[in-house]
Length: 111
Image (cartoon, rainbow, N blue to C red; front, side, top):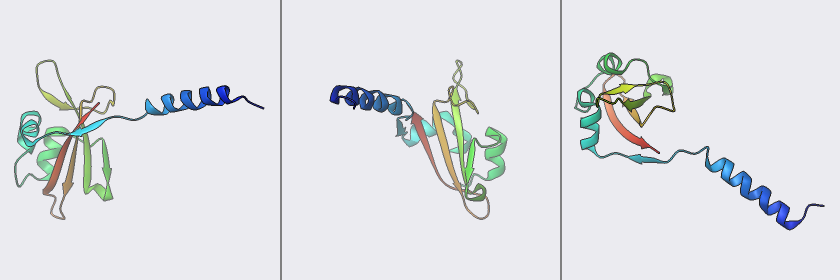
């Protein structure tokens, strides 16, 4: 039968391991959106403009109505889409209407 201290150690190690799986996320204000992805921060942006600027989304949901792009900032300050989760500094989440026009977007800072 395991001792109480041994059970506590197992619980603590498990909690630490699980905590490493989670990523802290904070929503960025509109000014940061305009700075990181200026061509996509206005009204009336369509799917074609998004695809031209960022390529294929990292993830999409609801048949492509919601698209998630991983964004990283290069050393010269340019923001580019990346499929490598380790390089990403932000997630750019866009929701499109039935005509393919962006209805909402959020820029989420990772870590």
